[in-house]
Length: 341
Ligand SMILES: NC(=O)c1ccc[n+]([C@@H]2O[C@H](COP(=O)([O-])OP(=O)(O)OC[C@H]3O[C@@H](n4cnc5c(N)ncnc54)[C@H](OP(=O)(O)O)[C@@H]3O)[C@@H](O)[C@H]2O)c1
Image 1 (cartoon, rainbow, N blue to C red):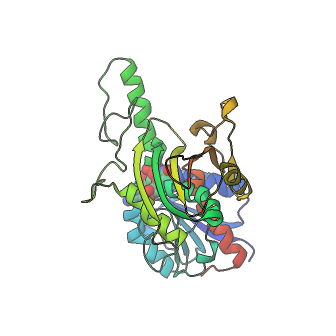
Image 2 (cartoon, helix red, strand yellow; image 1 turned 120 degrees about the vertical axis):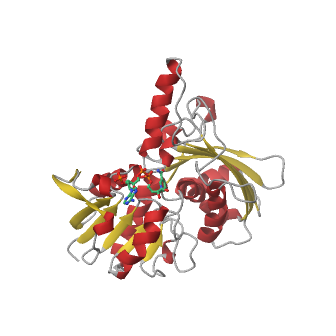
Image 3 (cartoon, rainbow, N blue to C red; image 1 turned 90 degrees about the vertical axis):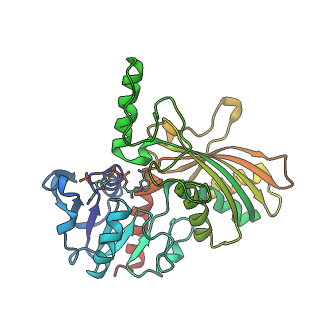
């Protein structure tokens, strides 16, 4: 194959922008690149390598000549257009929550379960950002010692809610400093100088009291790890950080694993970087993960409240490994195995 006809759906968004960037950085072998977004963006020109590509209106787009389509325009758009794109011959890698739990849709982190990619019917789902980074850190520990139970609290940056959410935080900081009332549009309350235990911002809470983001962490982790008995309990919190999600993860293992051994297996795992030197105040930080590809793990220590327990701190760039990079890695894997439709 001498190059792939590629489409980025949601090319104007926060994740779409990173997809464009990462495909160029990694020299993804694109023959023809197409960008799609809403009617609002039709005709806008966005850079691709040394030239510009005009954004098409997704509603009018035909995917017959597309080999791989990266969808990142929200679940509603994916539900409406991704199947159509797959039927027209594209292999869709979908970043939204639309198909993640469908039985015939693999949910893939290439370092964790690449073998699932081939069982697709034209759509492969990218997990949620908070799931990807947590599972990247759990997998080597799971393989070494087994995992019984996970207790996780997330500290998620505002870029996880898209470009407008970052603008809202910045505007609120200005307004707050000038003593003005902060306007809220994207978030349900002021996010500047605040922590909100509600992700996403609308339709967040289910009947069981958990948010949809929290249920994603539970259900997606079990699906990727192929372990329906894995106990996971979680609280997801939005914090006024621009980029990079943090997670405090408590792990109860089946067999004993020392912090030193956990460090060793984490260090060997592709895509994970251990930053753990508390004496020198070295541990992962959201701001230093921003723009980086790795999932950073630190504060690795024993949990003395149970027989076999560990506490870790996991940080990653939500737009890169949490979204765009993972999708591009899936596309690369498909190319390597030549499993394009
Ligand atoms: N941000 C993250 O950390 C993250 C992580 C994992 C997954 N995701 C998922 O990735 C998707 C995109 O998120 P984002 O953060 O990039 O959001 P965003 O910055 O708000 O961008 C949304 C994109 O969707 C497009 N879009 C909106 N309505 C559309 C319509 N009616 N038809 C066609 N395109 C439409 C927008 O195009 P216009 O510019 O024309 O409006 C824009 O390109 C979401 O499904 C999100 O859940 C995000």
